[in-house]
Image 1 (spheres, one colour):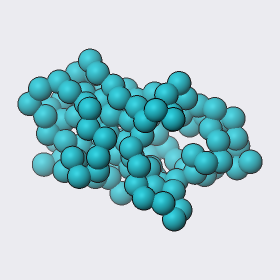
Image 2: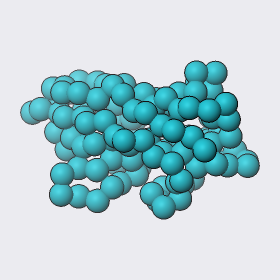
Image 3: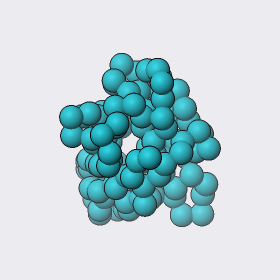
Image 4: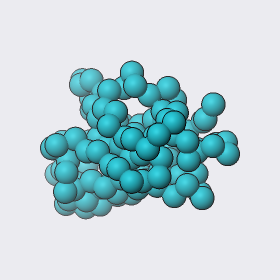
Length: 127
C-alpha cells in the first residue's frame, strides 16, 4: 500500500509556471506507475500525464503535450508535474495516483486503473 501527498499548488497568472510534487510513503515506490489527473469545477476528472516505474515511458493528454512534463525521482519517492504556459482553463484540483505495476509501462489514462490517490492540490490560473 502507498500513501500519496500532493503539494505545490497555488495561484499563478496566465503564462506562468508551477511544479507540483507528489510524495509517496513506503519503500516500494519504484514498483508503481504514477499518474496525474485533474478535476475542474463542474467537470469530471481527466487524465493529465503518467510515468512508468523507471521513467522509461511517459504519456500525456494530447491537449497538454508540450506544456506539461511528468518526471519522478525514485530515490526521493516523489513524482513531479512541471506545468508551463499555464492558462485559466488549467484551473483545477490536481491529483496524483499510483498503480502497482510489475513491468515498465505507463499507458493508463483512466481513473479506475489506479488504486491509490492523493488528496489533491488546488491550482488556480488567473487571466
